Image (cartoon, rainbow, N blue to C red; front, side):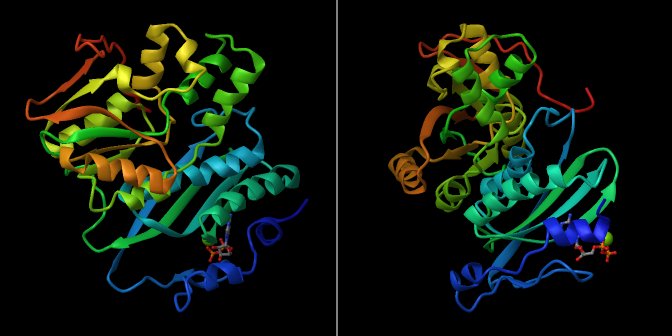
Length: 328
Ligand code: ADP
Ligand code: MG
């Protein structure tokens, strides 16, 4: 069995790629990677460092049935999603890993999934920590954003339009299929399972929304709960049209109450929810096109506090679920 340092050398150390350096001439972002006491990053003058950390715990955030390659992808994706929500450009990340066993058959595909997404975003793994223990994956991402331009939860204004990217609810539908509450034909199951296990962080969209969006958040705990954070921080209310929420073909065939639950209280969507002035409507659509991600206007911000969910005819829609909380 390999030891701790052999594991790090085998799976989590590689030379900094020339491509990453050459794509940003003059700014080698990683001055020193894995192997010393600290990593050293070069931050562009005039930029602020954006830092976020997310932990994935077996049985809490993922099922033991997930393929290691997908777990590697998702562990980084959920962190990149936080940078996306701030409009930040990813620079590098660290990986703290607790493993029950030094298992190459797990670590090789895990590292492959991790590096594939890292390469897609041009970022390097620059350090971490490796210990024995119950499977637990903690990634910290570092990004940069022009000083003062980060998208925050606190900037939504009455009259702004509310937007969401991609489609919502598939990850929750997959969870309900795993739990046996719904039965899906094979292909439909694979589609929603992929949404749950391979979320795509909306990094390009977040950057394109800088200077356009007044607030943004990534959807990890379900739309109602996450929108609630924006409303409290911004001191505004909102009206959401549930019929305007984008959903995939599989979810669209489900009974309406289940659709509403998956769309509004689902979680694990990793789409962006953001507000923008109504005058910026066309510019927001253009940002979606430029980033290659569909964006949908699904409501508006109100001066009246609270969250109102309505259907396409303006009738109130029941929302009997409470927001996700690890300790409630
Ligand atoms: P220290 O004792 O100084 O904390 P460690 O012995 O824990 O350092 O780690 C040795 C080197 O390997 C460090 O550069 C650390 O950042 C890196 N490292 C440890 N675990 C990982 C990991 N899972 N992924 C990437 N780098 C790692
Ligand atoms: Mg250490």
